[in-house]
Length: 391
Image (cartoon, rainbow, N blue to C red; front, side):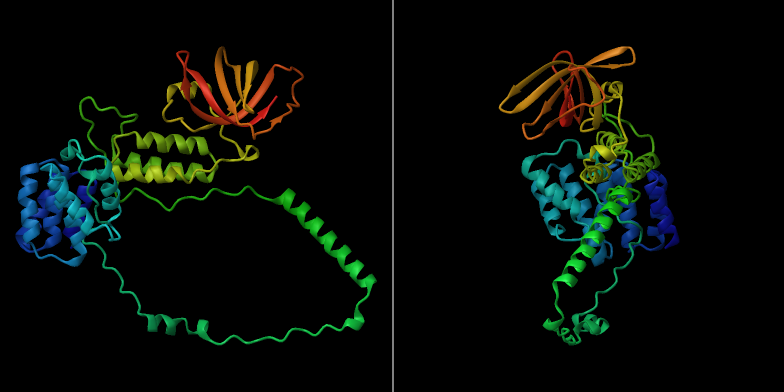
């Protein structure tokens, strides 16, 4: 099995031709080896050798199959059906594995087919429709314990509870003096605890998702006329960026983490890496202003507008105009950054109070902490959703 694992490592590294050569040697030694046929088939799929893929798929279907490999075979058969524009047959294969642990991509594609009836150019996007095992051969799943064994292993949970008798209170010992002293002690302890918590409380660390792309990262070819925000040259760069986004989120650098993930989503990375990046975005919290430590420059917004969408930003400038309608207010103000001036438009909801700015006596000065929502108008005005406003 060492040769099979080495061949799969070559495949994961993008060396599809070398991986197919290893698979053919294994097939010559063991003609009925399912996983050797699988490696040969999936390597020809990723190298877009369609005629060889069809021949290898037929040999894979005739090989000695096992229950563990059925889900991966269905993914290959569904992709083959998509090549022939047979959407109904592809859906049938996806429905067979939708309830499996590895059927998460099948469930996502079933939802996608409900909206989009035909997929364009599936031959050049094999990684978007095929789930790969973590290793070859896959590790066998441990058999689950039956209910009797689980109950025996945790038998102490089922022992009868011992009823404890409550202490008997003697009413004769009650006095107002003792009650007053007890209340004073409790109030003093509560006040001390609140003061201690206020001055020693550490900022809550954001939740880091238990996601990784090392088992699925792949660089997809960029077709002529295709528009991608960023082009990766190797799968290692995809893995490095994803892990860096997790590290930045742990340091509460939410803007930098969001920038890397949104750039990865709009890149030539494989489908699984891009979908995991979309899930990752939901873990990025809205930091309160007191914990915000990741401001960005306005020139960064114009350099990468799409990747900076949703970023938090703190701006201060000269108020030019403010219009209130139905309780909500729209501010227009100028912000100077270096030698350049930028026009900014911010929207404040009617439920958000307007705070007093202590650091300036000018009535025209305004400071806003908000979320970047895009560029509007012919002048490309920066538009913010205000989270806090000082005026």
